[in-house]
Image (cartoon, rainbow, N blue to C red):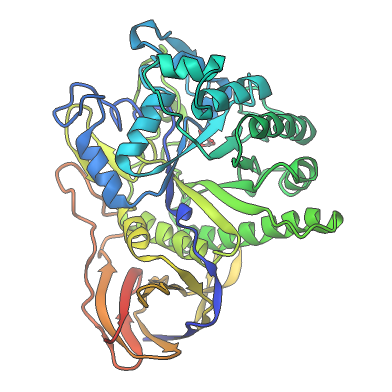
Length: 502
Ligand code: AHR
């Protein structure tokens, strides 16, 4: 039996958790929009064509902010195609995913969907085929109350009140040669700076995110962040990071190491952003937006990413997640929480069907993928201050990390309710773990809730016929007696809720 102990003190914190780390992403890609969140004629669809079954699952997932409309799609997108009377909207070829875009869903539908779902919209502007002019026009269309060309166009489209979108991404993955109108760091930095300026002049109080690297292994990684931030430092609030986790070798330990790599990635980008600040003698701190992250390796090539004949809403990137993937997603969530001081936004990519937490059949049901569960639990329970833990854990060899911690753990203290939520992942492939958490500070607790996500088969997944094959159970072996103790099964995700004793 392995042993791991954790010491926490409610006065020692990493930082306040920004609830925007529980964001997701909707792209015009495959069946994410059409057949995912939007399907007029579906038996659960409302008067705007939004699927009610998907909407209910989105609320259960606890998503706080939603990135839209891409992704690679945005770099060729003319937002004007997606507004106004639906019968007048053009059908266009989407060069990102080689599909036909019908434009029956656009900016206004997205904002309306977000309001119904209770999530904050995060819009990305096209800095591929378009530039600062189209970006500032979209900001005016969305945010200006009225009395100008673009705001009055919005009003004529039936949206009298401004949308007041705060959070904007300045393009998408502009470092990637696959991007429509890819740019080098200097070209992108200039375009992003000028777009940011005119967007801010159009609407006050915007939060702006510049594109960082598409993934940590990009040849331009590091230099890209430095050069871009050196140009846009004064204009932006965030630099983005994207990371997808692969398991091509079917090696669980190596697969887990993606979580350790994510930790390194966050630490490195933070250091680069602070180096740019140091060069300027600036106290400003650029925050990190991990606005695309997930497991994605099964559906990356051939017909998974491109189908012939320019189809409408084809099945693309429809990754079916298993229990092993849910553990990796849990590990990533713990990592995000433990970087609460700098990672202030994150978007699981994506929401539905396309590498999604939710899966649907067009014309049929919707269900929770395995990865849905750790995300929903973390979003439901993690609020307040992330505690700075002292963790004593055995280590193991995970990919290029010879001494990766077997136990990953995060604890979040809500100063309003006094509740402490604890998330613990036992990454041992073979051994159970005796886990002990000594939570110091005033007052005693009761163990109000304890859940375990475990399955004997790492390959187990949730399907239309077995929708709850992988889902959390009550924890079978834990107690609180001045100290939280639990037996964590090998390869298990565990959640404990401690409430202050009255
Ligand atoms: O999420 C799928 C794709 O992955 C996005 O369109 C792109 O930004 C990333 O490469």
